[in-house]
Image (cartoon, rainbow, N blue to C red; front, side):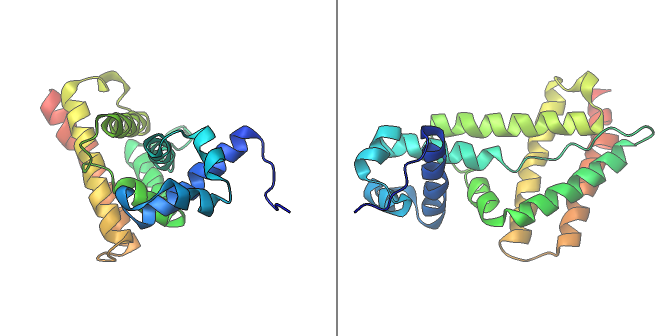
Amino acid sequence: MSTRRRLPPDERRGQIVATASRVFAERPYDEVSTTEIAQACGVSRGLLNHYFPTKRELYLAVIGRLLGAPRLPTPAFVEGATAEGRIEESVREWVDMVSRSRETWLAASGFLGASRDEEIERLLNAYVESMSDQICEIAGLHAVRDDPAVRVALHGYSAYATVVTRRWLSAGEITREQAERLLGGALITLVRQTIPSVIG
């Protein structure tokens, strides 16, 4: 008798993607088979193929899930709050969030800057653009958010933040407090000094 539990379609799809995320995080794409993923999910290969006809479609869904969370927290607006204060609060919450979701974030960030796949690049670019928009919201850069120099600067910060966070979480080369100071200090300098100097 089968012990598999019948799940609603959206729940089953989410369960498959979550399980596949763990499998792909452990080994490269080419070394993972759909049969293995189906077994890890506790479903038949036929059911897996019903939701994701190809391994590539499932892989893209996994990347989308990994890049969907966590995102940079946007503190609620408080009267009198400074950009520096909001940035520091957001960075503290970001560090706390990635610390709790360490494996998921490391798996997701591993794609950044490493893919030559057009569809994956599209997902990554959307992620970086979203992070840049959130920084504009946090730092009060609404009026200049579409300036090309601002976008380049924020995209550069995203790459910097990825390296700092990975070196903290993965290699343990710096402490959590040092990571917070590096991330917060760099973003405050970027917002208060560098960006104003390049946009006049």
